[in-house]
Image 1 (cartoon, rainbow, N blue to C red):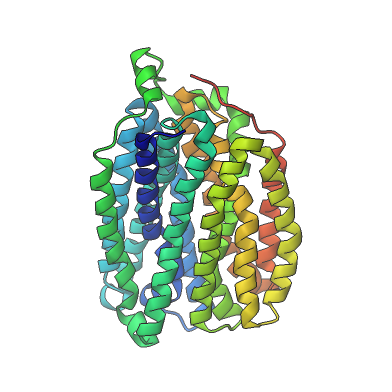
Image 2: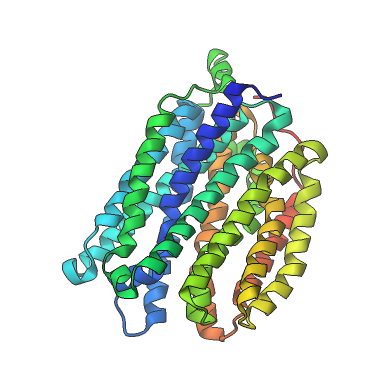
Length: 419
């Protein structure tokens, strides 16, 4: 069984991940108001495209963060990268919340927004891989699946908390108030949550595996160069393993905009839908993570992808009918299906790399996947809907990424190397 110390490690990683992802995802949930504040335009859809362009930039910065923090993780310790990333996120989130709008600072305002969003992306690029590797190397092998799935449950709950805050604000504040200053509230709240996480992480202990590698002088001088030479297949497989989860997370984030702007649902219903989806995705993750410790990762990844493809089509078709109960059905069923993959894939990625390259391997492959499959999703989907006038575009994007994760599942290693 896991010791009390192991459980504390999981809790510390989970809380930090939830708070940091809350900071990062509120941008997408409040995209409509941010577009009005920083990208005013006569065409609301064009303004939204610019906003999601900045959203995409944040995710395109994640691979750089993954490389830098991964390097620190493999060179200076998992704890070092684990702590520094959350501080970067807290500061950049606060500055976005305090940033003057286009009306006050003109073109300088959206330029600063872009820079701060890049810093957010850089920070979160180090956060999730660092927390995952930190926990992976602390807990016993028999419990790694459920341990890391618990972290991802809390990371996903960070999205749910953000969605819940959006629901509360949309009910208590008028649209005009939200557009003027209400959208700033989540960013300021996120800063204080991030600082709490930073203080807690400063007290964490280094992983036993890293300490052993350090004592045995097994640390690699340039981890990125080494991993590109020795583990190319692992990088490719891990990159595609992220596709379905990355797309789903940002599909759920995109739903408030998709439902209100494209399908004409009420704004309150859309935030409720996003919140429900994230809660279900989060809660079922540890169940499948625990199951993967018993039966293996592949036996959940493959059926999870197949069911998502088949049932996902039905759900998207129903959503277009524009019925309130379908919103609930969509969120619950899609959350359960994707949890089969979301609760397993991060542990699987850690298992693809030897210890000496694990932080860099996880940081690079995971963030490349989220940058391309997740960060570009809202921008690509919005653009394709505008040009094709096909409301099923989100499903086409979703099914493409499901197929990629399905293919990658056939090439995974069962266990990682020791060093």
